[in-house]
Length: 89
Image (cartoon, rainbow, N blue to C red; front, side, top):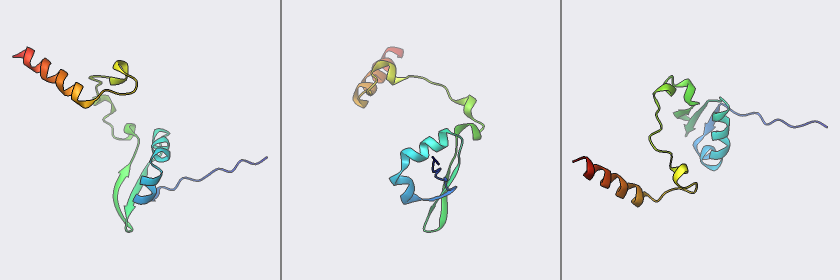
């Protein structure tokens, strides 16, 4: 039994990216980079974070998944930040 392997293109159209965003995110997580074009002109690149050279500069301030795995409403986040800011004054 032969398994078909789909070759991932390095240059993709913006429409292709928008329609298949999850697929391209997974490929980027696997280390692949892409150039995105619109009307045959390059507009930006997608690349894994480790290619930026800035990975060590990222700091997790709050992991909202620990508060609620389904997310936290933005109005609750803003209210909490406002309360913290008022306490610092």
